[in-house]
Image 1: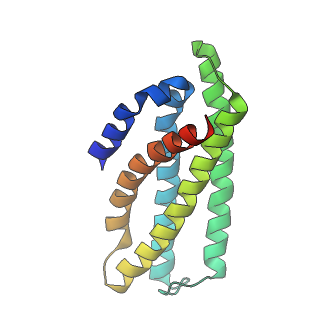
Image 2: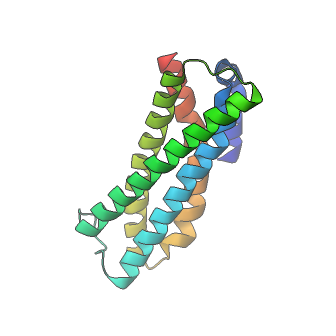
Image 3: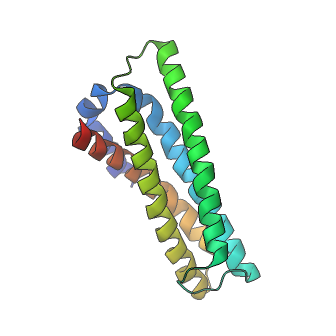
Length: 163
Protein backbone atom coordinates (compact mmCIF):
# COMPACT_ATOMS: atom_id res chain seq x y z
CA UNK A 1 0.00 0.00 0.00
CA UNK A 2 2.88 2.36 0.76
CA UNK A 3 4.28 1.82 -2.72
CA UNK A 4 0.92 2.58 -4.31
CA UNK A 5 0.48 5.66 -2.12
CA UNK A 6 3.95 6.96 -3.00
CA UNK A 7 3.32 6.36 -6.70
CA UNK A 8 -0.01 8.18 -6.44
CA UNK A 9 1.64 11.17 -4.77
CA UNK A 10 4.61 11.35 -7.15
CA UNK A 11 2.46 11.00 -10.26
CA UNK A 12 0.22 13.85 -9.10
CA UNK A 13 2.83 16.22 -7.73
CA UNK A 14 1.86 18.89 -10.28
CA UNK A 15 -1.64 18.94 -8.83
CA UNK A 16 -0.28 19.17 -5.30
CA UNK A 17 2.11 21.97 -6.28
CA UNK A 18 -0.87 24.07 -7.39
CA UNK A 19 -1.78 24.18 -3.70
CA UNK A 20 1.54 24.12 -1.81
CA UNK A 21 -0.08 24.20 1.63
CA UNK A 22 -1.35 20.66 0.91
CA UNK A 23 2.19 19.32 0.99
CA UNK A 24 2.49 20.71 4.50
CA UNK A 25 -0.82 19.25 5.67
CA UNK A 26 -0.80 15.72 4.15
CA UNK A 27 1.35 14.08 6.87
CA UNK A 28 -0.77 15.63 9.61
CA UNK A 29 -4.00 14.50 7.93
CA UNK A 30 -2.63 10.95 7.64
CA UNK A 31 -1.72 11.00 11.29
CA UNK A 32 -5.07 12.45 12.35
CA UNK A 33 -7.21 9.87 10.57
CA UNK A 34 -4.85 7.09 11.63
CA UNK A 35 -4.98 8.13 15.29
CA UNK A 36 -8.77 8.43 15.34
CA UNK A 37 -9.12 5.06 13.60
CA UNK A 38 -6.74 3.40 16.07
CA UNK A 39 -8.84 4.69 18.94
CA UNK A 40 -11.93 3.35 17.18
CA UNK A 41 -10.44 -0.13 16.75
CA UNK A 42 -9.35 -0.18 20.36
CA UNK A 43 -12.79 0.87 21.59
CA UNK A 44 -14.58 -1.64 19.34
CA UNK A 45 -12.32 -4.45 20.49
CA UNK A 46 -12.77 -3.52 24.15
CA UNK A 47 -16.57 -3.36 23.75
CA UNK A 48 -16.61 -6.75 22.07
CA UNK A 49 -14.45 -8.39 24.76
CA UNK A 50 -16.36 -6.98 27.73
CA UNK A 51 -19.73 -7.58 26.07
CA UNK A 52 -21.06 -4.02 25.81
CA UNK A 53 -21.28 -4.47 22.03
CA UNK A 54 -22.77 -7.63 20.58
CA UNK A 55 -20.77 -9.28 17.80
CA UNK A 56 -23.47 -8.52 15.22
CA UNK A 57 -23.56 -5.94 12.49
CA UNK A 58 -26.33 -3.77 13.88
CA UNK A 59 -26.85 -0.31 15.34
CA UNK A 60 -26.40 0.14 19.06
CA UNK A 61 -26.35 3.00 21.52
CA UNK A 62 -22.73 2.24 22.43
CA UNK A 63 -21.74 2.43 18.76
CA UNK A 64 -23.58 5.75 18.34
CA UNK A 65 -21.84 7.19 21.40
CA UNK A 66 -18.44 6.16 20.07
CA UNK A 67 -19.28 7.49 16.60
CA UNK A 68 -20.37 10.92 17.84
CA UNK A 69 -17.57 11.17 20.38
CA UNK A 70 -14.91 10.36 17.80
CA UNK A 71 -16.56 12.64 15.22
CA UNK A 72 -16.49 15.58 17.65
CA UNK A 73 -12.86 14.81 18.53
CA UNK A 74 -12.01 14.60 14.83
CA UNK A 75 -13.67 17.93 14.04
CA UNK A 76 -11.95 19.70 16.94
CA UNK A 77 -8.59 18.21 15.93
CA UNK A 78 -9.21 19.11 12.31
CA UNK A 79 -10.00 22.71 13.27
CA UNK A 80 -6.74 22.90 15.21
CA UNK A 81 -4.84 21.32 12.34
CA UNK A 82 -6.25 23.76 9.79
CA UNK A 83 -5.43 26.72 12.05
CA UNK A 84 -1.88 25.49 12.70
CA UNK A 85 -1.39 24.61 9.02
CA UNK A 86 -2.36 28.09 7.89
CA UNK A 87 -0.32 29.69 10.64
CA UNK A 88 2.74 27.62 9.63
CA UNK A 89 2.09 28.41 5.96
CA UNK A 90 2.01 32.13 6.69
CA UNK A 91 5.14 31.92 8.86
CA UNK A 92 7.00 29.97 6.14
CA UNK A 93 5.84 32.37 3.43
CA UNK A 94 3.80 29.75 1.55
CA UNK A 95 1.12 31.35 -0.59
CA UNK A 96 -2.32 30.17 0.49
CA UNK A 97 -4.53 30.06 -2.58
CA UNK A 98 -8.27 30.21 -1.94
CA UNK A 99 -8.32 29.32 1.77
CA UNK A 100 -12.07 28.66 1.88
CA UNK A 101 -11.83 26.06 -0.88
CA UNK A 102 -8.83 24.46 0.84
CA UNK A 103 -10.75 24.12 4.09
CA UNK A 104 -13.70 22.56 2.24
CA UNK A 105 -11.41 20.04 0.49
CA UNK A 106 -9.71 19.11 3.76
CA UNK A 107 -12.99 18.74 5.66
CA UNK A 108 -14.59 16.65 2.89
CA UNK A 109 -11.54 14.41 2.73
CA UNK A 110 -11.36 13.79 6.47
CA UNK A 111 -15.11 13.28 6.91
CA UNK A 112 -15.27 10.84 3.99
CA UNK A 113 -12.26 8.96 5.37
CA UNK A 114 -13.82 8.86 8.84
CA UNK A 115 -17.06 7.33 7.51
CA UNK A 116 -15.18 4.80 5.37
CA UNK A 117 -12.91 3.85 8.27
CA UNK A 118 -15.75 3.64 10.78
CA UNK A 119 -17.80 1.27 8.63
CA UNK A 120 -14.80 -0.79 7.49
CA UNK A 121 -13.35 -1.14 10.96
CA UNK A 122 -16.69 -1.94 12.58
CA UNK A 123 -17.44 -4.72 10.09
CA UNK A 124 -13.83 -5.95 10.25
CA UNK A 125 -13.82 -6.01 14.07
CA UNK A 126 -17.06 -8.00 14.18
CA UNK A 127 -15.83 -10.46 11.54
CA UNK A 128 -12.45 -11.02 13.21
CA UNK A 129 -13.94 -11.27 16.69
CA UNK A 130 -16.48 -13.87 15.52
CA UNK A 131 -13.63 -15.93 14.06
CA UNK A 132 -11.67 -15.90 17.33
CA UNK A 133 -9.03 -13.39 16.30
CA UNK A 134 -8.00 -10.21 18.06
CA UNK A 135 -9.19 -7.30 15.86
CA UNK A 136 -6.38 -5.05 17.15
CA UNK A 137 -3.69 -7.31 15.68
CA UNK A 138 -5.16 -7.22 12.18
CA UNK A 139 -7.02 -3.94 11.86
CA UNK A 140 -4.45 -1.48 13.19
CA UNK A 141 -1.77 -2.33 10.56
CA UNK A 142 -4.51 -2.53 7.93
CA UNK A 143 -5.96 0.87 8.77
CA UNK A 144 -2.52 2.49 8.77
CA UNK A 145 -1.90 1.32 5.22
CA UNK A 146 -5.42 2.17 4.13
CA UNK A 147 -5.24 5.69 5.60
CA UNK A 148 -1.82 6.26 3.99
CA UNK A 149 -3.34 5.43 0.61
CA UNK A 150 -6.80 6.96 0.89
CA UNK A 151 -5.82 10.34 2.37
CA UNK A 152 -3.75 11.52 -0.62
CA UNK A 153 -6.14 9.78 -3.03
CA UNK A 154 -9.17 11.73 -1.80
CA UNK A 155 -7.21 14.97 -1.46
CA UNK A 156 -6.05 14.73 -5.06
CA UNK A 157 -9.52 13.70 -6.22
CA UNK A 158 -11.18 16.65 -4.49
CA UNK A 159 -8.52 19.06 -5.77
CA UNK A 160 -9.18 17.83 -9.31
CA UNK A 161 -12.95 18.15 -8.83
CA UNK A 162 -12.96 21.60 -7.23
CA UNK A 163 -10.04 23.34 -8.94
